[in-house]
Length: 243
Image 1 (cartoon, one colour):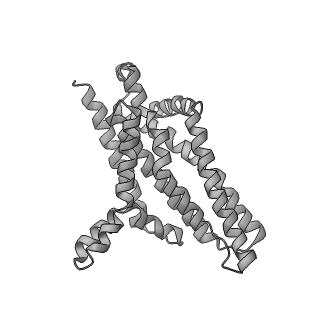
Image 2 (cartoon, helix red, strand yellow):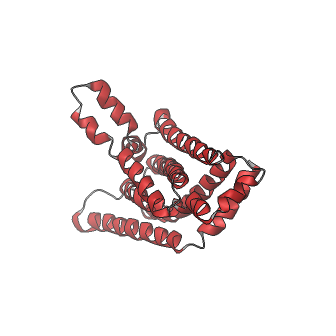
Image 3 (cartoon, rainbow, N blue to C red):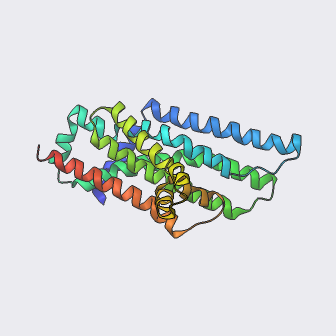
């Protein structure tokens, strides 16, 4: 695990010198800030329901489907393209440690960006009386969501030396998992198939967190997605040793 932290620290330094990292953060915060401002103005002008963090984090996580791959695309692709992956593989470090280290770097950056959104619930608490439970569960869901997306991003980055290809692969997998709930609606007459699609849907599991429900099955879903993606990424790296 120590080697994984070494890789993570090295990668974090590289992430924070990349312009794309700051563009990612600014885009996410600008859009969520706009939505939060709109939510606050509606009750004041029209007397609607009070604002919540559910729609803000719902938007935040949706945007991450496409923006987070732009950050993770270079995690292993750049190493392969520059040839430094060969040097890395000669060091006394396991492929799994490299993969976990890259994932840790990407996830810590995601945590960093998500932390900026805490200003919204703090404002709600300061000027209102929101239910704390749904706020906490929504953030738990958002963090698990990010963990899964970063895992998919690491896998996509391991699969291609081209960073653009890695971005497309990661965004494609993310979108596919996100849209799994749509075919579930077409198979309502076959409950088993409909249930399978719903269980594969990232959005279906997140929706429970956003309304204040924390289920073991939802937590396990994101943990399994991240774990399977990282396991596959380690196997992809391992296969390079035999080329």
